[in-house]
Amino acid sequence: MEEQIHISGFADEISPDFEQQLKVVTELGMHYISLRSANKKGIADYTVQEVQEELMPLLSKYSVKVSSIGSPVGKVDIEDEEGFQKQKLQLEELCRICKLLDCSYIRMFSFFIPEGKNPDDFRNTVLEKTRQFLDIARQHGIILLHENEKDIYGDTKERCRILFDELKDPHFYAAFDFANFVQCGEDPEECWNLLKPFIRYIHIKDAVSSNQENVVCGTGEGKIKLLLDRAIRKEGYTGFLTLEPHLVLFDSLASLETTAAENIIKENKAKDGREGYAMQYHALCSILEKIGQP
Image (cartoon, rainbow, N blue to C red):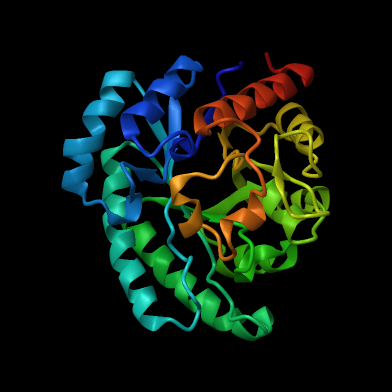
């Protein structure tokens, strides 16, 4: 692999045990993870001191770095003021954690929209609350990566583009997720074309639209091979490709999805998280080889 492309991943899909996560990624030859949860605790619930004492010694032991903080910031109902204020405090601590880990990126979202309501009616509120998140990130020199998650304001390409056009901030970019766009009825290629100037980070997750299920990357409708070929060979993308397999039910999945986890992963596609993660890793490596990125 060329040095400007690095494979990372949400290693909590391997196991809730942090040391087991690091063992598996290093056995695969990986040197980065996206830190979302460790030892059955979400990263937003850690303090700087806990990360320093509990997680950093293991990261050092296995020579693994952190590509991004997989935070839940913005994954709160747009009308939940108490939840929003709590997340602002969490973001302050997450920014400190990010700097401690020599990491530049924190993944975030643009708020859940109440069922049955029009997301467009919440445009100004979403922008104002996101600005408040950005104010915090800017003070710490951290970049927020907006993921196009299902059921949030920015789940379609048009609303994602509104966020980037309106906020216009060097501390705000896109984490592009192929599968989430598929599951929202979007064409990932059209999404890429519209959001390309703002894409700073890529999640490797695939899905099919027929039943919304996640599948091994390259076997669904995410157009991953086509778009990675364009991104890397023709458009000069550099940075991280972050595995998010969603191929087996894992401990923290229930906290990540608005619907029952069984609706996203209807049956395990591997015997355990370790095998599912390896399947996704090798499938991505195969795609990269085919597009001339050995």
